[in-house]
Image (cartoon, rainbow, N blue to C red; front, side):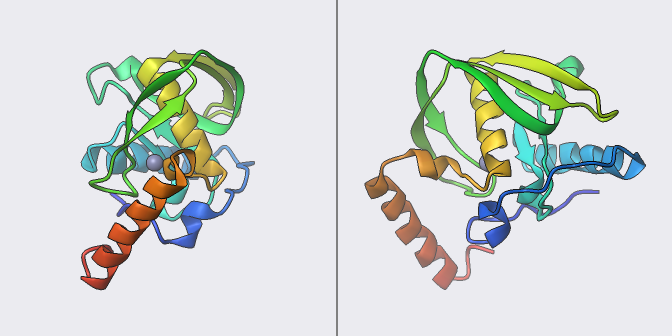
Length: 170
Ligand SMILES: [Zn+2]
């Protein structure tokens, strides 16, 4: 099932998500639906709040279907290591058509549970490091625009308010 992507302005995006405690078929179905919804929206990462579900689960595939082994499901993820710096342009499915440069760590390790509830660690560099931080942030109610300058953020918010008034931001 493909869920519509929730856009910036919906409080679910700025509310910390709840931990997941049940590792059942319903959770497996949610993960599948999240991949389907992410691919349909042409994204490489998606957090549950972005489909209106305030739970701590994210899916990532920085290869966008190229490599089935690259598909990542992270449940209750926690960033445990960050190294180096990278700066490049970042976007978000909940803020369509906007991009801004964001400085992030270059190498990132998270620990997370899999669909069976087993803890594991995953380290990513470059784009994957960026995705791990971006998606984990979503579970805290933090968006990438919280990492850019206040001036740029205000400019973006003004543009979005204009789109809302024009009925082009739903
Ligand atoms: Zn996002």
